[in-house]
Image (cartoon, rainbow, N blue to C red; front, side, top):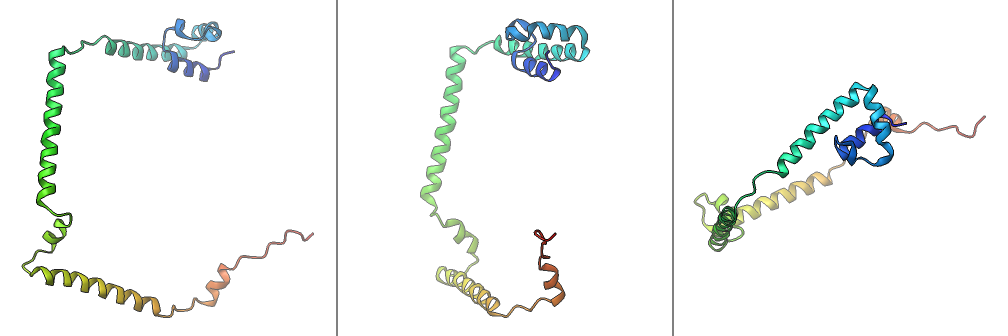
Length: 155
């Protein structure tokens, strides 16, 4: 007995042509097709997928000239990208974006000392926050967080 779920799996795997299906479920599939409109509808959908695949396989292949032109366009694009990347790599240091971001008319040494000072202030504030005593939680809250004893072995 072939279930509808198995029929769907076979139709999705092997397509609409029952001759491509394994031999064992073919007769059961034909019997299911005779009584089930859903199975017939599913096979029609599978046939449209088969036709789309076949149409794709039979499409016109490009000529050698078209293929050479496509490869040339790809190579040209890659060379152009590599050239622009190497120009950018030579002209800008790796931290160039930081110095452009900080460039507000302040001399270079002062800019970096401003960044260092900001980091130092952040560290000091973090240490001060860490040294403060946390406020104790209310007693009622602590009792709510305590797990209730589990009486497993009591009878």
